[in-house]
Amino acid sequence: ICVTAIGEVAPDKFVTRSGAKKGDLLCVSGELGGAFLGLTLLEREKKVFLETKGVQPDLENQDYIVGRILKPEARRDIIEFFAEKEIQPTSMIDISDGLSSELLHICKKSEAGCVLYEEKIPINEMARQFAYKLELDPTACALSGGEDYELLFSADQKDFDKISENPNISIVGYITEKEKGS
Image (cartoon, rainbow, N blue to C red):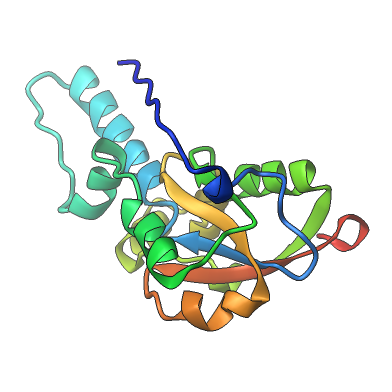
């Protein structure tokens, strides 16, 4: 299936990957890594099904992670929150290839670096436990897994209090000078 979405945006509301500046907050919506784990589970069960005819998939009551890969949803609620609270992100990208890849895009386009705090990366507890069961690092799933379709954005520090009001947004780090990022 191939999908193309076309839309319009007001000129003063247009957010690119290139606007992040030193001191900006680094934020993500939702939880990360679940879609990758859902795909991993579905691929495992497909392999078992193909190798052993008649065996039905065992999704181990992992509705959350399976739903994350099969039913991704655009985070319109976050965009509506920005409008309601008058927050203008300085840069933004959807997380389709994993947090680390998308963060690299923002840093390169903005000619900046960043500091990311591992303990601040939002990972659903069910996803975390399933990663451990598969002997995977949940942080690696969040950083490299992809297909979560959450939003990664930077915002001016003046918006800290407003952003902190939203339980669906995590502040995971900050933007630095290009040479000081890690």
